[in-house]
Image (cartoon, rainbow, N blue to C red; front, side, top):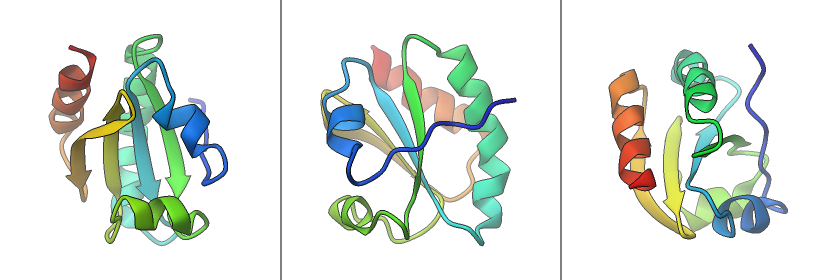
Length: 108
């Protein structure tokens, strides 16, 4: 299964805020067990929602501007954007259904 593409502070505006599709961004960290736990779920969802939602990973420590801008204080933090605005925020390991519901709200 392919890894999710990365987004960085430099590419955030173009890839996330200016996206014509809703975007889910997974803010993660190297030593985060919960990040590793949700990663396969997000990869599966990227396949299921291909063409309707974009899903990216963002290493929080390596991209401090975006992490600070959106108040990321714990990992994982998953933000869902639609029209350049945060429409959902999920912090910590969550069940698959929580991510599905956040995506579904964004694509309506």
